[in-house]
Structures are given as structure tokens and as C-alpha cells.
Image 1: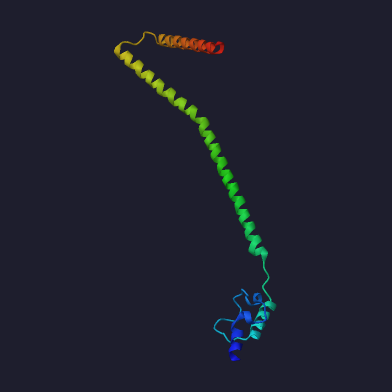
Image 2 (image 1 turned 180 degrees about the vertical axis):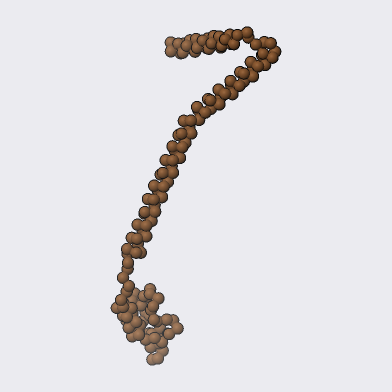
Length: 161
């Protein structure tokens, strides 16, 4: 008979209580495996104490809502900062792109003027310089007019044909 009492107390399925009440997931459950002779009444009393005991209230504001709102605020602040940085980058890129052709053309003009001055200096040294600087401009003007006529003829040919 003693063996049947031990078997019933050590076998949780042999008690009259449902299994779900015995498997309480709380670490404060007093029954441990080191006490194999604990009676079913001690277990049910411990379970009833656990079930009837006052549980701390769940503070949803501090545990969930507060951190969520903080994260949302950080996200909004981050998005605003990133938006401002992107806008600054776009404006700086646009300003650079708008100023770059003017800078490059000024640089090219200076470079070409220097080359022309060097060529004219070499021509003077060699004695091949034209007598009047205006003749250089007249030839350039004539070449430009010829180029314009050729372009006009090409455009006319494309529109007619």
C-alpha cells in the first residue's frame, strides 16, 4: 500500500487534478523534484496559493506604449534630419552643376587666349606675324561666316529632304 501511495504522489497523471493546473509556468512554484514524497494536498494548496495570490499589475504604458512612442519620435526626428541632409546635398549639387559650365568656359577662354598670345609671340619672333592684327580677325570672321553658311545649308537639306 505504501508503494501505491508513493506511485500516486510521484505520478502527476494519477492525481484527480487536471494536468493543466499542475503545470504552472511560474518559478515560484514550491514543489520540486527533490521532494518526491510531497502529497497531492500540498500541491493543490500550493497551486491554490499561486492562483489566488495577487499578481503585479501589468503597466502597459511603461512596457509597451512608452518605448513605442519614443521609437516613433526617434524615427520621425531621423527622417527629418535625413530629409534636411538630402535637401542640402541636392541644392549643393545643383549649385555646383550650374556653376561648373561657367567656370569651365572661363578656364577654357583663358587657356585659348594664352595659346593665341603664345602663337602671336612666336610669329613675331619669326617675322611671320601679319602686319595688322585685324587681318587675323577678318580671316576668323570669314571662316565663321563660311561655317554658318554650311550649317544653314545642312539644316535646309535636312528639312527639305
